[in-house]
Structure formats: structure tokens, C-alpha cells
Length: 130
Length: 130
DNA sequence: CAGTATCCAGCGCGATACTG
DNA sequence: CAGTATCGCGCTGGATACTG
Image 1 (cartoon, each protein chain N blue to C red):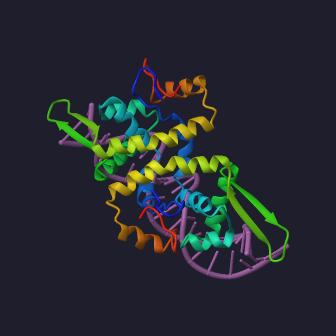
Image 2: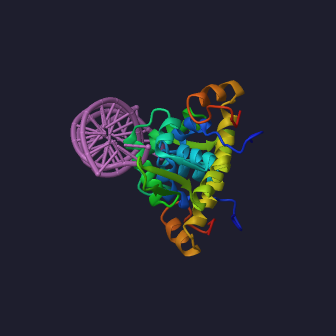
Image 3: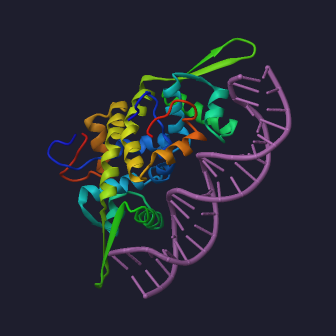
């Protein structure tokens, strides 16, 4: 980290903030990370309440930043799959400490998390951070 | 983390995003952390380009979230000092991995960081993340 | 010095309808 | 299915001037 000081420079962050500050970006990164590969419509379902425009915009953004990849299959009906790039995986991991911090701070109880998760990311049999 | 799954739930993040997504919030957290205690006008100088309104708004926000504290001295001219709370310190630490990730990703060279930092956070003798 | 008061521009984001 | 096209609102944050 720092050699002769305990100061931390946040200048790298100036660039990243734009990525992580978007309302859905981190959620999307994480969902894709959880699923490995996922289609547009499935993302829509997981992200309760997102509009197609917003999702499309965000995905495009994340692609430009090389955080996710896109593979389209020439079928009818069309199929497209999204996945994390190496960088995307890295981001996902780097976010975990903030998650832990936030969870701890909220006194995030199992109940709370479950109820929240039910309507968003973690519905179904598999849950985490409970 | 997760017990029987490698999935990561981001639901705690839904609440935190509001904090970390503000353009200046993280920078402010970090500067205060670096300095220990700092005054309004000095923050203005460190945060190159921020307007007094924006700074005041952000500080108020961070106080409400208990991330920073404020101490006012009844002097003339008035003096006010800001400092990190325990929670603020925690956030600062939790952000470091993202920093590392971002720095690495940018191929953040010593030169780059120095030049960027000169006009913002890390001016002067002490630098970090170079 | 440490803010407040105004005013205003830009963009993120949602809702809805439509298309290859 | 996987988006695009439109429209519009609210909030963030910048510029500037003023105050206890």
C-alpha cells in the first residue's frame, strides 16, 4: 500500500465511481457472477423492477468497460448470454469488503436479508449473506 | 460468507450505494481519514473544484449517516473540524480493495498517480498508492 | 471562516409502446 | 426474445452571491 505514510490516495477511484455508482451496476455484476451466464430476460426477472431501457443501457456500459462480455446466438427466437470478464470477476471480489461492512453495519439479520432477497437477487433455494 | 453456496448477495448494498455513489463522498471520507481532523476550508482546497454547496451537502449527508463527526469551536473567526467516526473508518478500510482493483486495472503508474494526485488529494510530501 | 440562498443544467432512471 | 424509441421527472451537483 503506502510505503512511508498511512495516507491512502483515492485518485484511482475517480474513474471507478462512475461504474459502481450506477444504481444497478453492482447488482448486475453480482448476478452474472452468481449465474455464470445469463440471458437478458432472466436478468430482467432477477432485477425486480428494472426497465428494459435501463438494463440495456447498463449492460452496454459494462461491456464498454470490459467488465462483462456478450455472446449472441443466431437463433429464432434470438438468444444472448452475458458473462463476467476477468476484470468483472475482479470487481465482484473487490466489492465484498464493502458488502461485509454494510451488512455488519445494518445489523443485517438473517430475517432481514431473506425478506429483502426474496424480492430480488437471492430468491430460491440458494441464499447467501444470511 | 456463504455457507452452502458460492453466490454472493448484494442486498446490503442497496442501502450503501446511496452513500458511496455520491461523487465526492469517498474522497471526503478518505481525506478526513488521512488528516485525522480537517476544517471546511481545507477540505475545499483538497477537493479541487468542489463548490461550497456541494461540500456542505455532502458533509451533512455523511454526518447523518454517522460516518463523520463535526466539532465547532465558538471563536472568531469560527472554526469547525471534521473527523471520521468508527463507522467512517470502517468504510474507508472496506474501500481499499476496490482501490487496489481500480489502480491495477488502470495500469496506474507512479507518474500517473503523482500527476493526478498533485492537483487533488495527495499533494505535498506524503503520497501513497504510487 | 463556514457556510446558506438561488438558480439551473445534465443525466440517471422509470413507464410505455414498438420492432427485427 | 432482446432489445430500441420516446417522453418526462427528479436529483445531483456546479456557479455565484450573500451572511452571521
